[in-house]
Length: 256
Image (cartoon, rainbow, N blue to C red; front, side, top):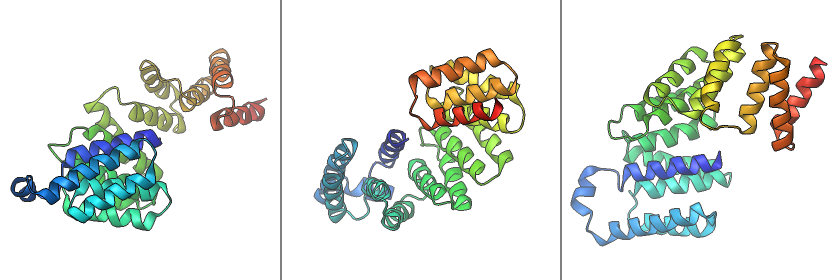
C-alpha cells in the first residue's frame, strides 16, 4: 500500500504541474524562484522514492521557501509527515494544496485518501467526487475506487458499490475495484457474484495474500472444499507469515 500511495502522490504531483493557478504558471514559469521550487521538488520526490525522508523534506521545504504556492511540494511534504505520523503537519500541507488547486483531480484524490484515513468520510467523499469531475485528471477511476473503499468504511455499501462500478466503467481491469466488489458481494451472501469479480481479478495475475484469502472464503461459502483447500495451500506455501494466513487458519479451526 505504501508503494501505491507513493505512486498516486507522484501522479498527483504530475497533474498539478506547479503553483496553484494557471495565471502563475503562465506568467512566472520562467521566473527563477518558481524554477528553483520545481527543481527542489523534483529532487525531493526522488529522495522520497528512495526512502530518504529527511533529505526529501529538506529539499521540499527549500522548494516552498522559493515558491510557497508550489502544490507538488505541499503534497509531497504532506505524505512525508503522514508517513512519520505527524497528521497535523500533513493536514496543514494538504489544506494548502487544496486551497491552491481546489479543482485539480490529483490533489483532491490525495487529500481525500488522507481524510478517509482520518475517518472524516463525508469530507473525503466530497474531495473524491471533485477529483472525478476534473476533465484533465488522467486517472479518474482511481478516485472512484478510493471513493468506493471510503464509502464502504463509512458503512454506505450502496454508494460503495456504485462508486466501484464507476471505476470499472472507466477501467474494467482496476484491481482495487474488482477486489472490493468481490469482498462486498461475499459479505452480502452473494458468493457467485463475488466469485465472478474475483476471477476477473485473478485473470490479471493477482495472487497476493488478500486475494488468496478471499478466494478461500468464497469457495468455502459455496461448499467447494477442494477449491478452498487449493487457496489455503497457496496461502500457506507462499505467504505463511501473513495476517491473511493467520486468519485463514482461524477460519479453518472454527469450521473443523
